Length: 317
Image 1 (tube, rainbow, N blue to C red):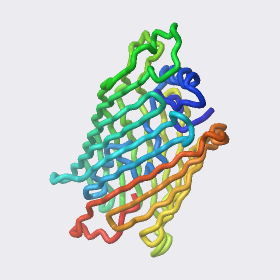
Image 2: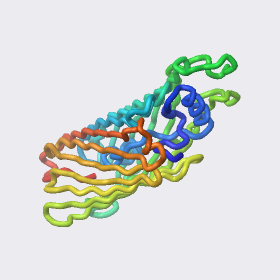
Image 3: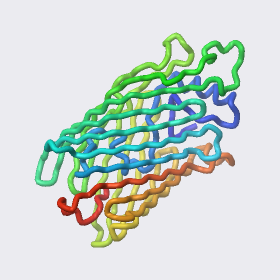
Image 4: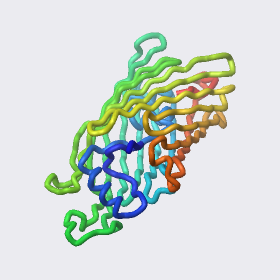
C-alpha cells in the first residue's frame, strides 16, 4: 500500500495497537524519511539550507499538518522557522524547529542553516547552504500492547539525541528557482544493531523547482515540482500549480504521484502576512476507508519587508 511516508521509522497506528506494533517494528528496519509537506513551496528552507536568507529580509513561518485525520495515532507535524540575510554581503542564517508525532513515537528536530550567495548574472543568484541539526527521539513502547516474549520492546526511549548535518544548493531569478539538497547526510543508527528495533537514518535527496508566469497584470501562474529519493522507498514526485489573483488570492491543486491529490488556497492579508491551507485526499486504498478523513495543513508566514528595498508586491516563492 503506497502512502505519504513510505518506509518511515515512525508510522501511524491503524485500527488497533497490535497492528501498530507490527508496522513499527517493520518500518524500523528500513530508512527514515523527513516530514511530508503539501505546501513545500512556502517551506523550502526545511529541505534546502541554501534557501536561507533568499527572500531578502527576515521571514518567519509556522506550519501545522494533521495527516490521515480520524486514524488513531496518525502523523501530526508542527514546524517553526525563521531565516534572514545578515549584515555581511551574501550570507544568510536560519533556525528551524520541527515536532513530529506518529503513534507512540515523537521526534523534535532543531536545525541551524547557513547560506552563502553569489551573483551569476544581473538577476541570477546561486546559494550554497549547510545545515546542522540535533534530533530528540522518544518512543513510548509502554503504550503498546506487549507480549512477554518481546524483550526488545520492554523499555521506553526518552530524548535519544542524534546530531546530523546537511547541504544544498539553490538558484533563483525573479521568476525561476531550482534547488538540490540532502538535509541529513549522516546515516546514523538510533538503536543497537543487534536489536530487532533498529532504525537507521537514510539520506533523502530533494530536487525542487518552479517558475512564475505573468499571464496578465492581475494574474500569475506558478507550477512547481518536488522530487524526493531515499533508499528503500519509491521515488516521490509532487506536482503543483498555483494561480495568484491581484497579488492577493492564491488557488491551486497538487498531485503526489501514486499517493494523493490536494487542493490549496492562500491569501496575502498584507504584503507581510500570508496564510495558506491545503487538503489532501489519498488515492491509495487508505483513502477509501471510513476512518480516514484526509490530511489538513495550514501555514502562516510573516515577512519583515523593509520599504527601502522597494518591494511593491509579495514574492511568489
